[in-house]
Each structure stands twice: as C-alpha cells, then as structure tokens.
Amino acid sequence: MGLGSNLESPIQQILQAFSEFSCIENTRLVAVSSLYQTKPWGILDQDDFINACIKLKTTLSAEDLFHMMLVIERAHGRVRKEKNGPRTLDCDLLIYGDQSIETPLLSVPHPGMTTRGSVLVPLAEIAPDIILQDQPISYYLQQIDKDGIEKLSANEEMKVL
Image 1 (tube, rainbow, N blue to C red):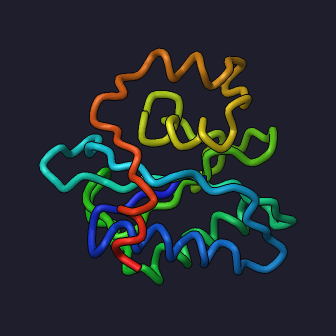
Image 2 (spheres, rainbow, N blue to C red):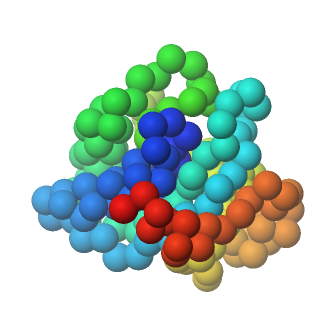
C-alpha cells in the first residue's frame, strides 16, 4: 500500500496512518518503509509530499481493505477536490497478493505505480524482489527519474513526535 500526504503536518499524517492500519481487524502490519519527501506529481503548484509504503497481511477482501483505506483517509480529513491535488492523506492499494482486480472503484495492481518514483522507491525498500507486470521492481526503478526524492532521516521523522 502506498501512502502520501502534503497537508497538515504530512509526516505526522503518515506516521498516524501506520498506527491506524496496524489496528484494522484481521490485519497485521508486516513492513513499513522509510519516509520520503517527493515532488508533487500531476499538479505541480503545491507543497512537496511525504510518501511511504506499507505491507499488510490480511484476511480482508481487497474491497473491504479498500473500504478501510477510505475510512482512514476520511478520518484524516481527506477531501477529494481535484485529481492529484493537495491532500491530508492518500492511500493507494498497490498490490493485493497476485490478484488482478478491475472494478469501477478499484484497479489492482495500481495502474500508475510503475511510473512513479514516490511509489517505487519506498516499495522497493520493503519488497526489493517484487515482480510488477512481469518485470522486477529494479527494472522500473531504472526507468524513472529519481530527482526530487529524498529519504528522510529518523531524526527528521522524530521532530514531529
């Protein structure tokens, strides 16, 4: 799962989301990436984002997990005003096991993940051997521009706590 925020204390938004995802019934937080500061994608005239990826083990269906993601986004004050605009918390279901899911609300694997450094870099940290669309994640990492992606130190993350 990919997480991002660029409003209202973004580091705190992401750290709080880690905790909230670990509390979902029948779900366990297995891995958490570092936090990364990234340039905005889509609408460029907005603050930088804080991004991270998490790995969950769950017995929830993809649809139920997606619903929980939306509940957590709303709890953070997420308002969907414009696509790729500023947000308090954005949660993307990137992968759900080896399933391909295409519904009006959910596309898994996430269609944009192989082109976005804000997703690939933290995802590679927690799943370096993952295969995406029949290619290792390292293949996609070689294809993207990593300028503007900065790993935050643990000290920077702790400043908000």
